[in-house]
Image (cartoon, rainbow, N blue to C red):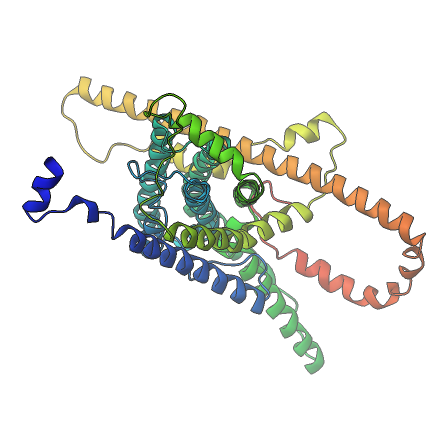
Amino acid sequence: MEEIQTIECGIDSRHFGNPMPWIGVYITAASLVCSLAVAVDISNGLRLRKLWFPCRFFSLNPTSLTLLAIATKLPVDLTTSMPEARDQLTKLSGTVLICTAMANFMPSLGTMEDSQVILNVVPLGILVITIIVNVCIEMVTGVIYAFRLEHKIILFFLLIMLLILCSSALTVSTTSQLLKQQCELKHHQASDGPDVQVETSTVTKLKNDVRKYWMMAHSSSPQYVLSRSLIGTASGAFCLLGAIVLTEAFIASLYHPSTVLLCQRLIYPSTSPPGVIAIQSPSDYQWSTRLVLFSQVIAVWVGTIAPACRWFAAVNSRGFQIKTWSEFKGKFKVERYWIQKLVEWKDSPLHFHIKSRSCRRFVYGFRNLILDVCLKMQTAIVLFSKSVRLTSMLAMTGLKMHVSCFLSILVRGQFKSSGSASNEETGSSSNTETCLNDFVLHLEGEE
């Protein structure tokens, strides 16, 4: 009776879901734009031989955040029924996409001022917390009934990635100041060389000076510093694990669709007479969920390339060589620059005047309490990132050993005869390489 009355008044509620497939197309377009921007950054990194892949087109800015808000519309949809396997998988792909985007955003923090960091990290944090809360609500209410374990894993990754991003944002200004001071010292060291009178020696000295200054500029690049840091290593590891989780869920949905149907029948019990199983009708997004799923899977796979390469380069360049307990404890030392900003905030006076002495004491105590909690969280994040890097180094060292043993068994010592021929050729350039190594800028704790 009520439906007839709404039709007579000119309002037909049966057509309210007609725009939903086109909203799915809109989400697909936003996901493809994100993957295209990441692909351009990857191609520029390959073209310029910067395999740490600096961020230019897909960096942390309002445009990227708007695209992500559009692309993650399905995970935050609390009411629309998503009964099919691919519908449930689009919920997971949206959360993995935001995790991948955060890993790609990490190096772009190095080029921002403190005010820009706050204006960009705060909206990203609001978006991530909104996604986490909405997905948890959907898991409780039964809107998300499939791939629940994968969702829990990705939500944990999202929370860790957000904490890592905030942790690295606190160190941007401090690390830039430290590297600037080192660059000034190395500049005086490079300019205080001996005077050269011979023309050929002058040309050689000019070439060496160019190499030295290039080495200082390259090793102190803000994006490169964040990419090689342990924070960048940890974010790359979690991004790679998130892509693996999505791939596993995608393969499971292809080869085990009956599991999803069984979950659907258990979550949505029948209201029909006994013995009749009621299956939910297809989603209001209809055919567009297929486009959303494939576009976001592509975006995740493309977006994982740069963080995974940063993780592999950082882990592969270090060897797992710990012989004593003191060396092991040294690996978990929290350097000063990680907490220097928070310590400065704690030691600084308030920027506003309070007349009442008791109120002023309360405000100081409350501020110091919050900063103490932040200091402990920052220390915990750094230690957790160090443990992730150490675990990655251990796994990589074991993999190298197994691969080298397999190759030595396969080739039977052919690699031993090829190492002595180039000693004379490399002897002339060893002094230059040693000289250039002195102009590589490091932070405390970096090898």
